[in-house]
Length: 394
Image (cartoon, rainbow, N blue to C red; front, side, top):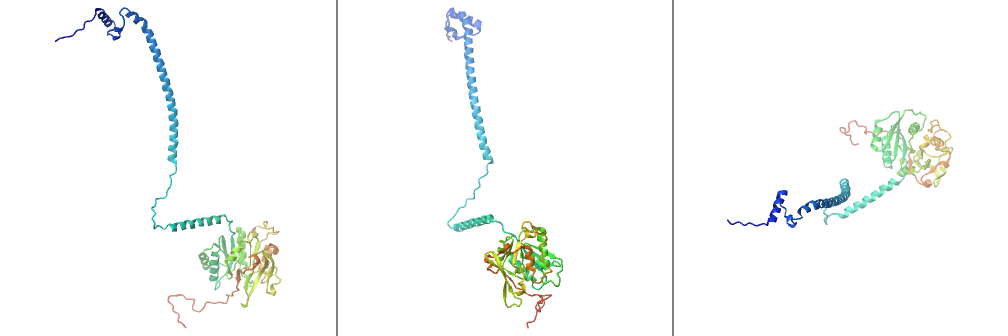
């Protein structure tokens, strides 16, 4: 097999050998160095070259470190800023209230759009009315006092008056006073009326000589109002009288003492008479009277023809009363003088009165003077077993 050998010069061979012997390997870079200056170059230039390389390397390393540090700081600051911004957005999204949207409805041409619009307008009008009512001052409370006792038409009278009071705007409290004992029938009637009431009992026996048997019962109601300090307009409404709704609405305009004319059916039942104030606007300037026996009275007014502020009973300093004894109806006075004697305890003269309505030109209640003492049930009304008894027609 043919071999190819490359002949080297003696000088180069020696250098290769020496270099191999000294260093253990041959460097191609030795080819570019002269043979005579080999030892001088290795001993002189190697430290300088090594120092220069080290300095260059350190400068490059320091420059790289500074660049890395600079970019690291910029990246860190920029990363913190972005992280805080993202965290704020995340918190806002996490704690934001969900947007409530009505469900999607596909409207068709046959939908009653006009009806829905009218309902919306009605709702707005109703809301406006409710807001106006809330802005109005609160109404005065009416305290209606009614004495009652067992008689033929008691249930009818109480039911009729209760239905009238039910139509009056609240606040209203109905104080019903019975004599001697509280009856189950009266309590049942009061519960069915739907009116806020207080059922009282007057334990004081009425004198046989006392014509107005409701005197002690009204006094029991006045004592109750004074003890509990009820604030409102007190009105004595007997159950056998007839009242209009306008009367109760007019009572709320009373500041201290209000009065009005009352139409009365005469005892003979053949004529009607008028009793009460003569007014010039709301100022009382005189009185209507048709009986000679009543001309000696100071104030010609019926028991259901006046109303007064309840604070007069329990707050005498507010109204400048020089005395503080209880205001009550007197049972030891002549017949027909109960009203004027009571009013004299409440006001001094007509200057402290208010005529209602303005001009006292309307009749708002009637006093009929119905005698029910001698009335009896018609024959055949009292049946023990209504479903088993058949009455013959006569």
